[in-house]
Structures are given as structure tokens and as C-alpha cells.
Amino acid sequence: MMTLLERLDFSCERLVYAEFSLSRSVATNILSRGCKDEEGDSKPLRKVPHVSTTFLNSIRTSDNRLLVLCQEELRSVSILGTRQRIRTLEEDGEWLEALALALDHYESTIKSLEDRKRDPDGRKKISNHPEFTSTSRLSDDEEWIADLLLRYLNLAVENAPEPSTEQPGTRSAVSRLSSTRIDLAQSHFQMLAGVCIEFCVVTRRLDLLFGPIFRRFQSVHYTNVFLDVLEPYVLNDKLHYIAPDAMAQFVEHCKASNDVATVERCLLHMDVTIMDFDSILSLLRKNDMYSALLHVFAHGLNDFITPLEILMEAIFDAADTFDLNTPRRLDGVHQNKFEQYGYKAILYLQHCFKGQTFPQGRDLKPEER
Image 1 (cartoon, rainbow, N blue to C red):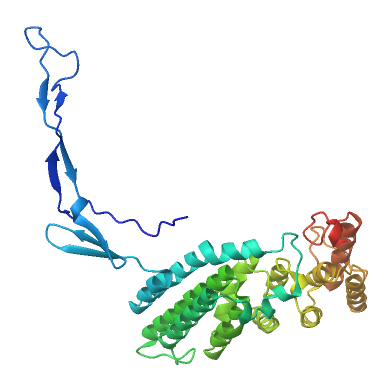
Image 2 (cartoon, rainbow, N blue to C red):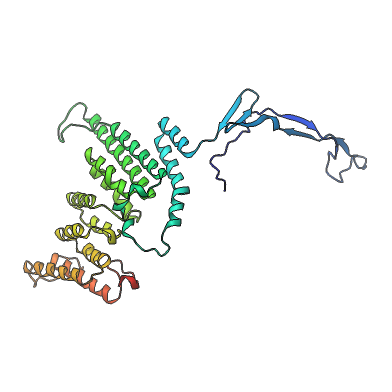
């Protein structure tokens, strides 16, 4: 099967051509059939020679090249392989075009081969865990594509705009310039994080994303930028796994921004069956994220009782510090943790009795019960 790589238009190249007449003339009527002159007589047919144009001697092939003879120059068209085309773009400094071409190559060849090897039953194997990706299982193209991304990452970090060293609140003659530099550096690493995350998600190299790429962002102190760009990929169901170290950093980042609820929203979109339960459960209990705790226990450990017991302990602890005679608000807004946790427990039980997942509310499948 042939694949169209590129379409070239030679209509403006003025190729050398030859014209020749056919041996047989063709009778043609200048006017349409049935047309008559002023006297009413039909116009006679006029025989004109039929001329053809040929470019037969203007196009030749030699040494994997296509030679095209134009009226002013000789054009040479070479057919390059994918690696040669990417390497040429890399040498010309067109890194984003090179990475885009690498992704196209991956999706058209490597990914289709992986889909054929996939287990038709859809069973999850521990060897397919993102943390257990081994270089011995990767093809030469996959390793080469990963090296291309790392070369781009290192080059982009080394040539990043310099962040400002001006302390907040101080004034200087170059304060506006410093502010511009901060914006440039921020935008640069946001773009860089987006390229790396998109590339690793498409190529299924999460070991690369949370390994050398994540550590590179840590080394230049732009971890928060990386985590901010990572969040939409989780919420849009493009990324279903975050490594334990990155998850701990993500929780701390959300706590510093006073937005712990974002962690819970992300966890509800992640595949909890491949998580490190010891680390994630301790983080959830420590930060009172009980919706995510219920979700992880139910879907990751198939345990519907233990999370309810943990939540009931939190309810009793909240009751000790809350005046139970305080009237509830008419609008239903929770006034304290006792009401918040109590409502969560009741909603969880309601979902369990209906055979639905919490908190999504979709019907439980037989294998999830």
C-alpha cells in the first residue's frame, strides 16, 4: 500500500515539452451542430490537425531522484525517509515541525502496530503499567522519537528567556522590562510543557513524561507551570495517570493555591487501578478529600465499606466540635464540616443502594461490584 507524503505542483515550472500532430486529422465544426450561416445553409466541417503535447523526455529518474527539465533550469526532487525529513527539519531549527512529523509517523505506523498487538479481551496487565515501560520493549523508532523530544527539551530550556531577579514590591527604571521578561519566561515554559505533555500522551510514554521531563522542569524551578498545563489533560480524559512524586507535588501546589478541590476533580478522571494506593490514600486522608477517597477505595480496591468507616470517623470528630442545636440554613449551604461530611455519607449510601458509582452516578458494571 502506498502512502501519499507530499503533493508537488509543477504547473508554474515551465517544463520543456514537445508537440506533434497525429497522423489522422479530426473534423471539427467551428459552430455547434446544426448551426447555419446567414443564407440558411449549414456550415461545412473544417478538418484541422490534432496536436498533442508530451513531457516524455522532460522527466527522468536516477539514483532515487526525480529529474525535471524546465525551460530555465533542471530541478531535482529527492524522496527522503521519515528520519531524514525529521533530521533535515531539526538541522534547519524547525523543531515544532519536526516533532509534528514525528507524531504523524507514530500514529500512522507505530501506533497501528501496537493496536494489533493489544489484548483483544482488554485485560489489564501489570507489565502495561506506565511506570514499568522498559526500553527493551520499545522499537528503534520509538526510542529515536523520544530522543528527539529530549533534545528539543534541553535546547528549549538552555535558550529560555531569563527570569527577572527583581524582588516583588521594588521599583526600578527597568521594572516594565522585568515584567515583560517574566511573562516571556512563563509563556516559554507553558508552551514547552504543552509540547512535552501532548507528545508523551500521544506516544504513550508516561515514563518519559514523569521521569526525565518532569525532573528537567524541577531543575529550573518551573514545576508549577508544568502541573498547571497537566491539569486540563486529566480533566479532559486525555491523561489517566500521574506518577506518585508528581501527584504529591500537584497536591502541594493546589494547597498553596487554596484549590484542593481540583485534586479531587482530577482523581475522578484518573484510572485508580494503577495508582500507588499507599501514597495516594495517605494524601487523601491527610487533606480531608473524602470524595476522592471513596472513589479510590471503590474502584481501585473494590472496597465499599472501609471508606465509609473512615468518613464516619471524620463525621464523629466534626460532631465533637459542632453545636448540634445550630439550625440549618434554608438554602442548604453547609455551615461546617459536620454537615458537609454527613451529606457526603448519605449521598454515598444512596449511590450504593442504587448500584451506582460515586460520585458520577453511572450504573455499576458486573465486574465493578
